[in-house]
Length: 126
Image 1 (tube, one colour):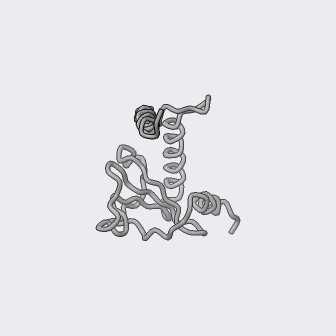
Image 2: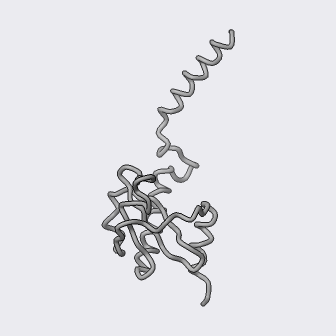
Image 3: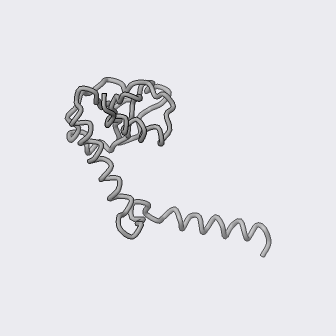
C-alpha cells in the first residue's frame, strides 16, 4: 500500500468516526447527553438560587465579532472570584428565572478550571 492509499483509508475511517453520535457515548453509567442535561439543570438551579447575581443573554458582549452559537444562549453567575458562564440550548431558556441582559458581560479569557473554581467560590464563608 502506498502513502496515497494510506491517506485515503485514513480519510474514509475519519468519515466513519464522524457519524458516531457523540451524545450517545457512555462511560458505562451515563451518556454525554445525560451528563449535559445534568449540568444544565444543576447550573439552572444554582442561578435560580442566586437570582441577584445571575443573568442570561441571547448575545455575546461583542456580537459583531463573536456571534452566539446557533440555537444557544449564555447564562452566567457573578461569583466572588469572577463570572462563570455556560452556553445553553435555547430550549432551556425559560427554566432560567433570572435577569435577561441585552448582551453578556465581556469574556475575560477564563479557563474551564477557572469556571469550576469560580462556582466553588460561592461556598466560601463571607
